[in-house]
Each structure stands twice: as structure tokens, then as C-alpha cells.
Amino acid sequence: MKLISQQMRALAPEMDPLRIGTGWKKEDLEKPQVIVESTFGDSHPGSVHLGRLAEEVRRGIADAGGFGARYHATDICDGESQGTDGINFSLVSREIIAGLCEIHASATPFDAGVYLSSCDKGMPAMLMGLCRVNRPAIALPGGVMNAGPKLLTLEQLGMYSARYERGEIGLEELEWAKQNACPGCGACSFVGTASSMQIMAEALGLALPGSALLPAGSDALMDAAYRTGVRAVQLALEGTKPGDIVTARSFENAILVHAAISGSTNCLLHLPAIAHELGIELDGTDFDRLHRGARYLLDIRPTGKWPAEFFCYAGGVPAIMEEIRDHLHLDVMTVTGRTLGENLDELKQNGYYERCAEMLGKANETYGLSLEREEIIRPKDKAIGTDGSIAVLYGNLAPQGAVIKHTACPKEMFRAVLRARPFNSEEECIDAVLHHRVQKGDAVFIRYEGPRGSGMPEMFYTSEAISSDPELGRSIALITDGRFSGASTGPVIGHVSPEAQTGGPIALVEEGDLIEIDVAGRRLAIVGIAGERRTPEEIDAVLAQRRAAWQPRPVKYPRGVLRLFSLHAAPPMKGAYLEME
Image (cartoon, rainbow, N blue to C red; front, side):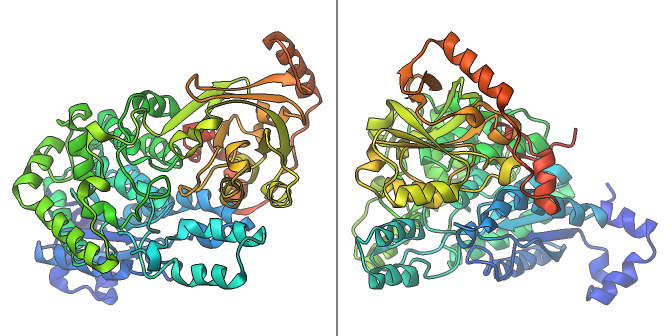
């Protein structure tokens, strides 16, 4: 088989001199050529260290007889954008990064690719991009940051901020939290979207076993980077593509892992979008089906006790998979060239778990702890929960579905009938929450924040303001066609579909409507008008009258990438990818 890079050299006489001018040597031109695509940049802690990892990847490529070329598609930081219109650009950035991956790998074809990222949109974008290009490729998760003093992690900052706004703590305590929440590089140290998607890359079989969520500055991650580079050259010579590896059964495995880790609700946006690139249909019904009866095992923040740094010390993704092994498709192929079952067996034989235990011992010394592995990843017979971690709700309010992370929701809110308090933006809503204009028993709506409304930003500050309030956090719900941070906790329901901007029923909710939430029954519905219960037929008639009078809101973004998103974004429950049909 003649490598595609060599075919292109024969077709384009300019290629050799242009690459020589870039710094390639003549002998490099004849080697297997590997694109090393990363989100490296000074944009945030999750990307600033990726340049070092890329160099280690290139060293592995070189030692395996190939040549690695660095390309960059820098991502943004959701944390830095929170609470501003900047967060509206977050989800669409996934599409732009995936597009750059496609452009870089296709304009000058490479024989294989290494796709390196750490964070919320960079990681899913890289997975979308490598699947879309569908040439030999391997993902490298960029690791997780260490916890700060007193095991402080960034997702706690929203709580500190809300407590400061309510006058419960002083400025000095808030400033201490700000100065210490991010002590170094890597993804934020909780199982938010960044950590969840690193885990999903490995669970799908697209990253080396045990490579997800290694400490960002560790020798273990540098070793994984080197081995990833070596494997990339082997994949180029073998001709194995992502489409040869990832199947619908691979996604089922990933969803079962998602249930076991209580992963971010944003995975319900990202996994369907990745599947779409391979022509695989995946939506909220698959998550709901597979989460039912699934074991929830991971005692790590935001729903658990420990920082995400401890995940790999307890054995990481392989340890999770061993606990749920009986439910996994062990015969699926992975990027190693072996099946999932073969990978798991090899790890038990090559000392992997002993090395993890050694890291846990060192972490215990550093933090003054005496943690055992089973306190971080529970055995399946001592699971934290036995019904997964998310549920997809349906009803006349969300005909296409809505998502709740029930492991982060107070049990009091699993079944409730609440009074509707609709707001047409997050800014209006959070002001009402912080100044006590929201009362017990309210169903607080933030609408027109879906993909076509404003880019589908996170409602992180509002959710934190509610969940950190001892009374409101157990007596109201927050419902939105936007989304939540993977760090969000509390009674929050997102991704309501269809969204308000396209005329979904959430746009028709009025003050005083009665809203029923039933997590076990998977129901989210309007059951009353003006505080009085009505029959389903009466509700339908009222909604029809409201729909006749409803007018679409003016387009928020008349130009640029958010205009593109407002015209072409798929519904939230399908993945909010750019639909061009």
C-alpha cells in the first residue's frame, strides 16, 4: 500500500520544497507523515501545556520511523467566559475546531493523526474531527490539574461567589478561593465536561487504555504521549481508521461508563455529534435506556467527594470497566489493534494497577490522606447508586426530551408540581434568584438560550446560586433550553427540546402555570394554568391559543459564527451539530 502522503508528493511538485522550507529534511519527506493536531495555546490551563505533550508525541513518532507535524486549533475556556456573552461562543467553537481538524488533515493529507486536547469543547471537537476525516488516528487526552490547598477545586468557586453575593462570606475568603482553585495546568479537577470527555475518548476505544485524566504534569502522561506517537505510525502502516474501530456497540460501552462516573450532561450533546460523523444514530433515548439499572460508582466531584486527580490513582477507566465488565461489549475493537477485553486482560498482567496504587500512595502522602482505591471507585456491589446518573424526561413541555442529572439533584425534587416563573434570559433570572424574588415551589425557566437562540450557553452561575442556597436548592427547579456546566449540581433540567427560538412549548409557558416533574416516570409537563390543575385536553387547547399568538424573537446574532449556528444547529437532543441538509 502506497501511503497517501507519498501519493500527494507525486502529484504536487511544490510539496517537497515547501516542506523543506518549513524545516523538514529530505529524508523526512519519505517517512509516514503524522499530523499532530492540538488545542495548544495560552488560552487556559487545559491547553497551555499541550505543546510539551505534542513534542513528546513527535518523539514517539520519530522513534517509530515517522515524521510529526504540529497543527493548532486553539480552544476557549468556558470558565473564563462564564456569566458573559462570551459563553455563547462555547458550543459553536466545537464545530469550528472540528472544521479546522478536517481542513488541516484534508488540505494536505497525512497518513495518520494524533488529536490532543483536554477540555470541554476541544476534546469532543477533536473526536468529531478525526471521525469526519476518517484516516488512521488516535486521541490523546491532555490530563487533569492537581487540586489546590484544602483539596479546593474550581467548581467550588461558584458556591463561594454566590455566598459572597448573599453576604455570607467576606471578600478575603472569596479572594483566597480565586487564588488557589487552579494551581496548575490540565482540565479542571472534577468530573465536568472536560474530564467526562477525556474518559469518553478512552471508553470509545480511540485513546490508549489508562490514558484519560492522568495528572497533567506527570511522567505517566508524558509516557502516554510518547506511546501514542508510536502507535500513530503503526496505525498509518496498518491503515486502520476510526470507522473501522468505533461502532454503535462502542458508543453503548461509552454510555455505560458515563453512567458509572456520573458524567456531564454535556456528553448528551457531544457523543451524538461524534456518532453523527460516523453515520451512527445516537440520541437521548439511548442514554436513558442504558442508564436505567446501571451502577454509579465514582465518588468524585461535583457529585462525589474527591478531586478528579484521584481518578487515575484508583485505576481510571480500566478500573471502572472492570467493575461493569459483565455489561460491556468486550469484543469491540480499539485503537490498540486489540479488543476491549484483550486490553483489560493485558492491563491486569502488565502491572498497571500496581502502578496506580503507587501513585495513590504518593498522593496520600502529599495531601495527608489515607484513601483506599475502593473509596474513589466503588465496587459494583457497593455502588453509590443503581440507576445510572441521568434521565431523559418527556411530555408536553419537552416533546423531544430534556435532561436531568439525577445524581446531582436533591431527592425532594424527584417528583414535584411547581409554579412556573419564566425568564427570557439568564441575566434576568440570576438577578431574581440572588435578590430573593424567586420563592419555594417555583419552576424557574430560562428560555431562548438554545443553540438557535443564543448558542446554548451554560447556566452555571444561576444553577450554583440556587444549589448553594439551603432552602431554594431543595424546593425549586431550574428548567432551560440551554445547558449546564458539567460542574452544576442541584435541581436543574436542561436541553429542553424543541427550543424556544424554534417555537418549542417552553416558549409558551406563562407565569403561574403548573409544572410537573417526575424523574422516575421520565415526565416533564405543563399540568395546570394560572395555578389550577387542568385536563390534558384543556392544556392542549390553551397551548394552541398561545402558539397562535406567539412571535419568534429577533435573531440575536445577525452575523458571524453564531449566525451560522442559529441557522443550522440541530436540536439539543440530537447533538446540536451543524446540520447542512
